[in-house]
Length: 373
Image 1 (cartoon, rainbow, N blue to C red):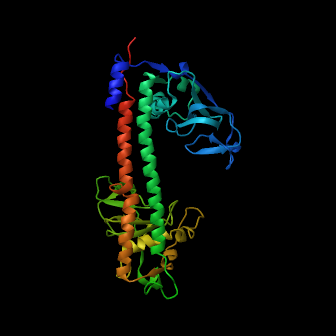
Image 2: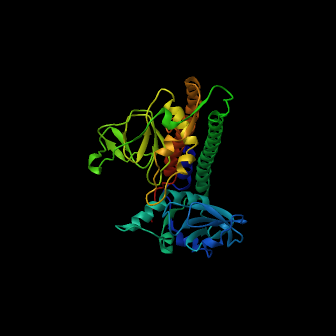
Image 3: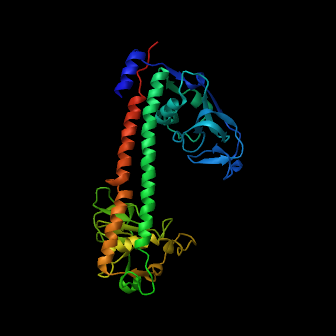
């Protein structure tokens, strides 16, 4: 930051000129359609999405910024340097001047273009971007030396985040591997120790909650309310389930999904809960059922509203090793889960911290004093 500040003080002490894109770049769309994509295409194919598809032919061979004309308004940008194909409702910005570093402009648009587009909305919602909106967008044009240094700094932040994301993905795969190993038992006698196989209904009860009205919910209440999903739909001033309870969603798009709440909560009638018992550790049961969640999802009835019958849970057969072994498994998987999902610690927390740091520095680096005429 200090190096950039010194550069700006030396090269543009009176401020930076802002210029419209129409004066600096070609702005246009492609000619391809979605059906032109192919899984094994040779060239990247930019469509109205953050996901890049493939195409057998290319339309452009250049350095450019890609913006969708529809969908993800102001949010999705791609930077490309090479051959690519372009959808007919996706815009390319190709600079025709040496005074602008395209990667610098890419970072600036990522930082400021959405705010500009939303400002155009007034009271209506912008559902598509028109060419003049892009052409009239102004970007700062500091000396190219300043632009290049800013790109170098922001590229380093981006590379670090990519490395952390790759490490997190590796840890997730490692977690899944150990979870599968720890929760796979031999039904014939139990290889590692004595494992009993029992139906859920033989050892516990599947409890259904009670639905609340919207008027009963309050953002100031203490207890989360679950119905039709593993994210709370609101809060209530009472609980009907204790902390550390396993739940299985039984209605809606999330029917069959396994969840776990580590504090008292209210269970609605769209959420089955597994009653606590002395035979199965709650967290062990959560890990076991979430590993085999597809067993419940596959039994969801889809006539009308998706629904899971409680018998699918009661009749589900689970392996039950000794409680000491269940606790050992839980201890191992808890550490992996914290590393891969906990927003307060582990890699997700580090990624979030780096992202906030990146956003702060990006804002600082891409804010310039405007040069007066």
